[in-house]
Length: 88
Image (cartoon, rainbow, N blue to C red; front, top):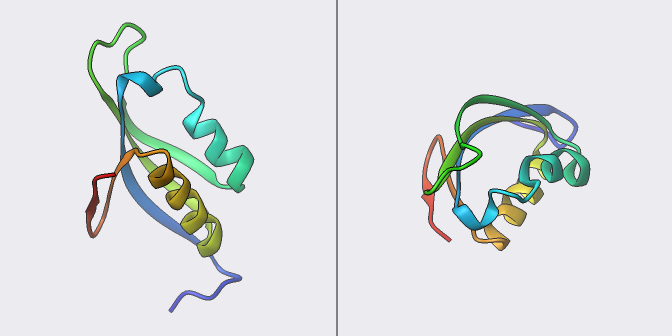
């Protein structure tokens, strides 16, 4: 059972469409939501023609992680987590 005061980890895979390649998405997760982010895998070239993706280990309080994931959904990024796929 997770309590609000407990720091947790959540692993997600985040698809980055080409129109977001120049956006500081991961930086915003850190600065706006106070998360610690570990990038465990990624494909996103500087001259990439198609979409890229990041595998991220998010660390923070459950409310911070929930708020950050809601923001990612609000900006319509596709998120895969350990239990489901969200296509927004």
